[in-house]
Image (cartoon, rainbow, N blue to C red; front, side, top):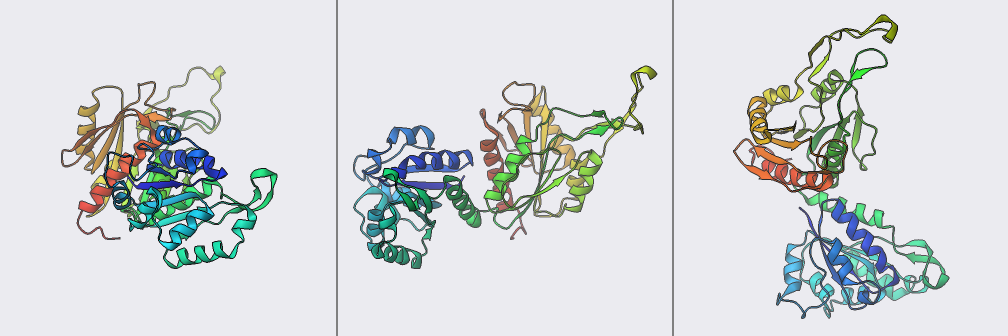
Length: 398
């Protein structure tokens, strides 16, 4: 899991940092908030402690850790400061470490993103421009403010960039340095529909939420993601979306992209389909039809049989009992690297809900059981396991 230090300075836009914190956590990022003394006059540390991955820190000295700035700086994958005030920018550019936030920035080698926010006159002052130029020369990324309504009823340049834009920039920068950066990842999602006639079909309750969460999270970690899905849900920026309906459709599209570095079969592919599909809608007046089923193609088994060295193939097992036993059997039978099993009979952890709990089994005998969590958080856990498998596998240099 990527670790981000979120610095918050004392400006009216500090309240927007709460939204930035929440969005980063929802995206599977470990967030460590650091508030300046000025920030605490606008927002409370308790709010960030409740939303972030660890408690908010506000001081170099009022902490059980004698050197909190070095711990935060050394463990961070990225530091983002939002809002960044004019005073903070001046101290940071001058190398003055007079509080926990500036000390952390001087103690880190991680990438840094600053998001200025201030009144127009301050934003346009030559000293602010000079300080930003100094920081840019040192490799600090600057997300410039927008124009709009400011404190006191003024309107102009200096408004903090939209939180969604800031979060997207942070996630992009984290992904560019992560283990999935540059990897080709193929994810399937949703339940297939197997036609009975032009109106009716054999299907299942899969919403596609888990597969879409995996695709979005992989893209944010820097992977080149293709999502083969049966559902019409939004996808993260940069994800190539391929819409399909039946198991045959999915098999065709997955096979065409089977050379991906990672294949995650999160879709609930129907095991059976009608042997004969009626050309016209079956009428009730004609009596109860006899629907004879036949097996669909086993996409996961085909992927396991054709798996090349260094490739990681992940399957899912949606079960209603004997979870570990059946998942272990499927893992061995399909000859894959990792399987994610969940009990779809549970009201809070199956189809059509936003939460899940799972058991992860790998080919080396590893077992990990997760508590109930959001599907986005579970996607992060799964991708961490995939990243570890990629790192351990020979011949996987991107």
